[in-house]
Amino acid sequence: FAWGAVRNVWELSDMCFLKRKRSNETLTATQNLAVISGLPCERKEHDYHWPAAERDEFTLPLPTAPAANQAIESTSMLCMMLMLPYSYEQELVIMQFHKNASVFRCDMYKIYSNQLIALGPGLTTSKILSSQDVEQVNKTVLDLHSHMALWRQVLADRDYLQAAWIVKVDADTMFLPDKLRPLLRSYHGDQGDRGVYLNSCESGLLGSLEVMSQRALRTFARG
Image (cartoon, rainbow, N blue to C red; front, side, top):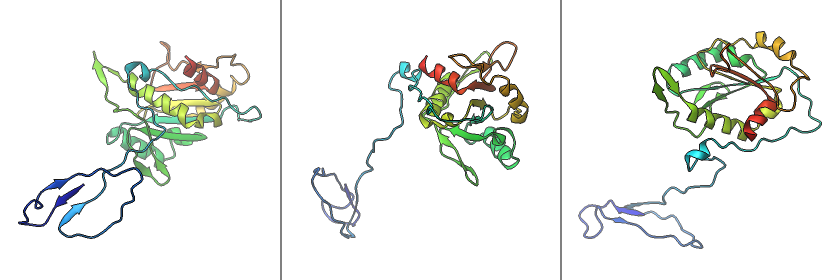
């Protein structure tokens, strides 16, 4: 494309021109002060999956099986948060990072968000494909869509293969990994074929703290 930047030139000033580049054509950069021109941004293929239909939002990729000879410590944890960017959650994550608290005391940790944000030295968010918009019904926040995008990305990243347990924590939840480890140790070797998840409340598993074994995550992904 090109735009006529020169003044008072018939059929050039303030005119826009668009030409098609042939697939086998090679362009050479030249300087012409009369026009401003360039190539439009190109869309490149990537591995991100943006759901085309509502059904796709609830379809997870098939999990990867761990290596047969892989040895993983029985209480090792991959801990993660889904952070709403530019909110109080971001401030909490940064504070916890500097104090080495919450998920940052786990064996591995990741902070997910719908934007790439540098939170501190060596800490940048991992991106999920979601607007993170939520609905609110009777003072209850419904954020199923963003959490499905989170689990889709967790499975795609495959970091879970390096940990025995996967822990998802809200930024405003008090989480003490060292208190959780003895409980996880008691489940070593007793998970059955489908794995184990822990109820975080008497009424069941709540989103503020979700704990599941690696095998349970693979079971969840297979539906």
